[in-house]
Image (cartoon, helix red, strand yellow):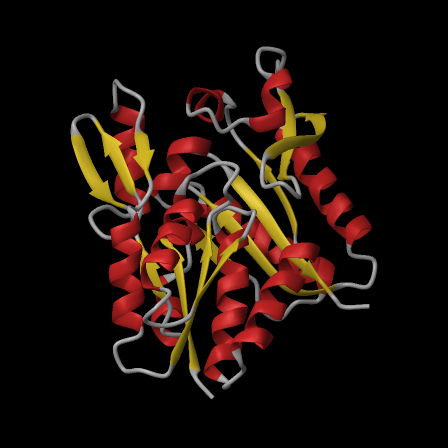
Length: 285
């Protein structure tokens, strides 16, 4: 049976130690800031990026990998032979990354097998899928088994996040169905999520961050009545707040481990500093 090599892109925001431990291949997107282009997670890390972003006079922009970038990654992964490639990427509703991967798949289909999945998620909501699939691949699971794991998590994952400002989502054109909330905040904190179609949308709005935080954990408990098996907190330049959320998640769901993942430059361009998110995968029925 062919081994499975898992490939993703840098917007999955997977902590470096997990990338190395699970042999995950990561294709970087690019971020463009004040005349300089950086490979996300290669040329610039989150801390340096947020510092530059706060000082920048112009809005940062991002660009997806080319199909050739993916072809090179696929060929590298398959160079030892007997390899099935599973490529899992940023929501097609907010980026052309998935389409680039599909084009690359068609360019190598005569050489080896590549399966491409639209995560319909962003940041470590992609990463949590990729990590669980990579664990399965390391255990020797087949491609079909790995695809089934990815699809099951994608269908059940719970994601809620807060942004300090909707401006970044609005200016970057990634605001989706949350656009109606712009300009009417006045200390109202919109609680955002990602729809089944992979778009950002508002779930609720609460006055003040403390109440918004409490509401998020209330909604997580409502959506995961049988508890949870996986949890993560995703943060930007606010690690201390992220650590408090992680402790709360551990206590609420009796989780021994909650992954702390830092939002990289590409996703950070569109959500801005101060963003924080919860990611939860409920227990199976």
